[in-house]
Image (cartoon, rainbow, N blue to C red; front, top):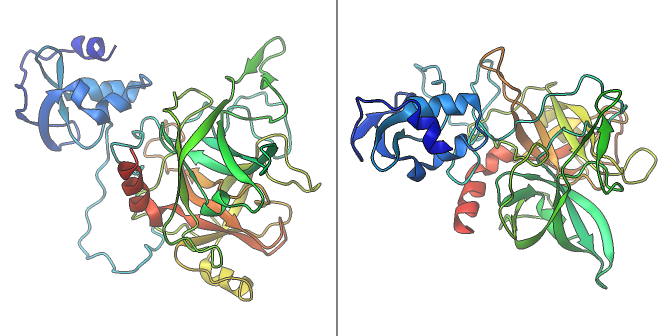
Length: 386
């Protein structure tokens, strides 16, 4: 399929193998076989029109197969506005009015045309309250535990799929007293149902693909995680095999290291199967929006309980709208600002649910581990565990 997409647009004025070329993004690169260009191969895996157009524009020749000008991205990128001032040497980037965000780019992570994309919201939803739609957040993972005797202990933490082989979660979820982390479930919506289906029209149903339960071959907590302070509460889980992406199982985007701290009051989403207001674990994947609170204000609330540092973020504080027990390890997330009115919504993960003081208490936000502070650790850890 890749070969024929490019052959249809073969350029007779071609470059030669390994010749220097310029990508559609204006980046100087080399003309190499498409099978050797990871970023373009990954970008067109879903035959996204934007990715295909970029691949066609990248073709630079043909030698026993299509050659492409292979740069650092498999999609069209927008250069950041030039700056005439030297960036501040602060430890945490501050909020900016016009900061142009793009997903964290690495050959072991999904390209920007793959991550953070979900099916558009159906118009005729029948579920109410905070229950998510069956298509919502296909990157959500439910972590399954067992008791020491081997019996099932249910789902007690969340996580997010960030590549075909790795799930991101909280380090605290790797060691829950009295339970052993056993598996990762992907593609879940309603836990009690063997087949997740909802009415799509008056006469039709839409059903999710069957869930996938995967064994964990490596549990990798941050080496400096502190259970007492909550600092560095982040971990990676390596799955037993690569996951095939579908409409119901897809990865979320990760932010770049230079991501500014979110503006106070910015609304972000959290999701999971945690404890609800009736004190029971939710059967459905729930979602709710929470406002970001400045760390300085959050410190005044958590004075007697924990130390809040730049690796953490605060969000919530509205009555009945919060993360709760069982949601730890799940995502705090939002969408990238659109560069074009017609762009698809693309989600990225701002944080990992850490802890709170109770659940859904007015004026008491929850704490989150900021992903951008660990972007390099995530990439380096994935590379060293492939």
